[in-house]
Length: 295
Image (cartoon, rainbow, N blue to C red; front, side, top):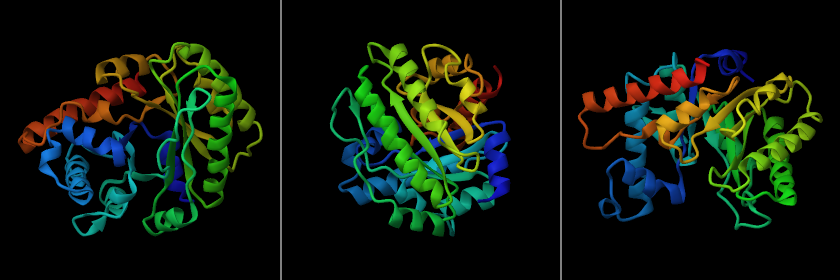
């Protein structure tokens, strides 16, 4: 494991850019960017267009290691190039930004108030990730309702995969998202944290991992998890909040930085001039950095 990269992730002042929309979420991301479904005829064209969007973000002068610690990529993006380099190598070699790979294959059907991850094979994907010099991984499941059995299942599945990923030399981001519209959101989050703590007590300090949580209803609920030696960082998803609302909520939480997707790209449009695009992205990044580091 790269010591320099670990230090950047643990001590860096900035946030993680989530550029990992995949499959079903890609058309929505493109539509928000101003690219409608009639502008592509198949999946290959769709992924080419979304790669162009991501390439425009990554190559922008606003997208710098002084403010962006890492970028989360989808498998197709990982194996696509920017200039003559694969995207992860471009991020690290040209920008000094850590590449992270989304590894899950999407969500299973709702059961016990939660959506577990669909089972997925790790070995081939992680072998590909090693070739592409990936630093860490990310995997997402979703909690919709207060159901103790369901929440336990989510945590158990996340940690099982996390341990396997750590054993292969990567730093996993565990993401048990709580739906921002869940009726008992605060109660869910308290129980979720208790289950996470049980698992953390079984980890040793060399088993480095990170968490990506919905911004909690009770400010600072997760802030003390960084006291576990194995916890490298805690990051927040925007979860459907606007950038303004996500930033306002995040700024109330110590030891939590952003890992925003839609809130990061909000306002960017395919038809903007390069200057307009860079100005909008710069404003977005600056506001998210402020919410992440100025508490």
